[in-house]
Image 1 (cartoon, rainbow, N blue to C red):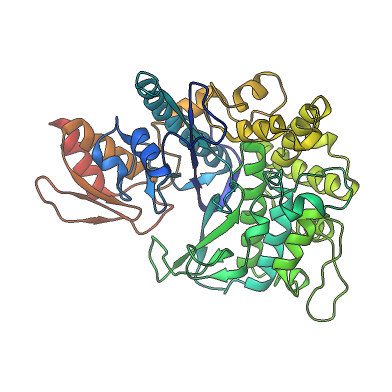
Image 2 (tube, rainbow, N blue to C red):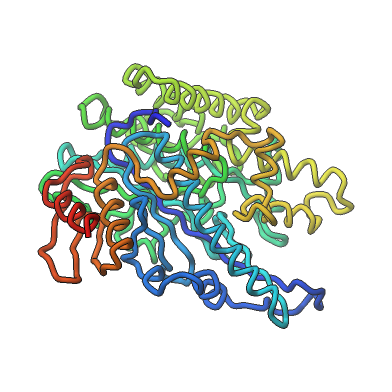
Length: 471
């Protein structure tokens, strides 16, 4: 497939997956899960080589798959310069882990007691833990990012591209929701956990942006903007909106076209939490400017970036969805986006199940449906069936997902990395691989640096790959 939706920089998405386990046979309601999180993750990775568990393990498609702190699988997609590749890489991560999960569950079903593991592309659990989707954007060292204004944009984007959340029974948010079209759901699952605009330590501070200077590139030219507040989306259309808006806004900033002062919020944390309940509630801005609602801030951004967008069908389709999503937030009528934005898809499902459940939205069947929405398995999850029924949009074909599992994106150093990983695997050679370097370890060779994320060719790397391939 030809790449589509040209971006103005390298972009990559990381997804943290939640883990749960269940008994296959009926057990008392108060029984503990059969497997703790760490044990469940070990089962998922049991049938893969030991190196797959390392934080430095890369795949032939240029991505990284590993077990992160807290015993959860994480898939970091390769650098992409086209929106279509971002979406395909993200879906490929789900597919790779779903296959690993199926193998583990087939094994667990033969044991006594039989058990099953679920991998959830969700964002929060009943114990107060949160995990989600991180975004990485290659940005220039200069000009300086207008952080306050950009965080204001992120606070509003959090609502537009949220995955939706049905608060767990007993939570205050469940009982104190104002009447709205989405109630009792929240728009974003991650928004209630945000505690700071920025943080240098993403494991301690729940912030919109991680400020640790780790460029994975030539540090004299580039920085890596690491956005850590996003909800993990099941529908790739939601992901497309998230990435397009951020990329286009960053391009406008780098061109000196906008300083984002109109987007600066007096308290972005309070604003995104308030908008999560009611997007049309006014949030205070800095500089004595009049208060602004979530749809108004997003419209301001869209009006500014509209003239800068490329003439491309995928870009146009994504931008149209962004505009329709903003209108849905403002009007409360989400029928025009109910198959494309995660929170709207989820609200439609919840409403349908609650309508026939004895306890309404508080019925356990509604909560079970919400969990199944995030389950990445085609057997126990809902996404595959929703796509077949036309209830969840498919912007990436099965063929594109299959190709992205083994083929790196177009036009970035991921092509070099992926080819090197594949060549080493075929030749049975050990190697050290990072985002910005490759090195053959058997026999030892000098490290080859890959300092430019947008360069997909290197003479030294090509020679080494050819040597490995010819043997």
